[in-house]
Image (cartoon, rainbow, N blue to C red; front, side, top):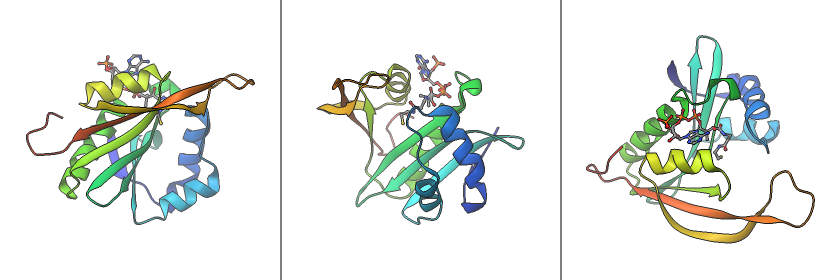
Length: 156
Ligand SMILES: CC(C)(COP(=O)(O)OP(=O)(O)OC[C@H]1O[C@@H](n2cnc3c(N)ncnc32)[C@H](O)[C@@H]1OP(=O)(O)O)[C@@H](O)C(=O)NCCC(=O)NCCS
């Protein structure tokens, strides 16, 4: 598996992965803007010519934010997200960010376990922030706000 910074030329592969891997995929126009945006780092994990996963890092003043991470369903539980996340932690630290932030649905157990394993702690919740996936009624779920410090001695 190799990691590569993604660019406009990868739009079709990124769109296909979003469609396959996300309940609410980013639309093509938004993906195209993200791949062309200097304030974002979009990284992909490739196996040969197949994009297995991608992740988006946004640069903020003093901090960085993980905006998305998606792994193809057939490639899950093989360390793809962990590899992408470890890489973005290193990039954020090398870029001078003091913390890496993210937000995740409270019912997204795989993502919560991933983030905890990589040293993220919970900072708070936005109650009722997201419509609950798979429901049509007014049910909602909280956004969990998480972060991890990026000083040199923090565990990866
Ligand atoms: C969350 C997601 C990115 C994890 O990707 P992955 O490549 O399967 O994750 P990894 O194989 O690197 O797993 C690393 C750790 O995360 C945790 N984890 C990942 N998937 C898990 C699951 N289904 N159940 C429990 N823990 C899980 C485990 O601690 C795992 O370590 P282990 O395999 O040694 O137990 C993937 O399930 C996905 O794309 N989900 C849909 C999109 C999404 O929800 N993205 C996050 C919010 S934007």
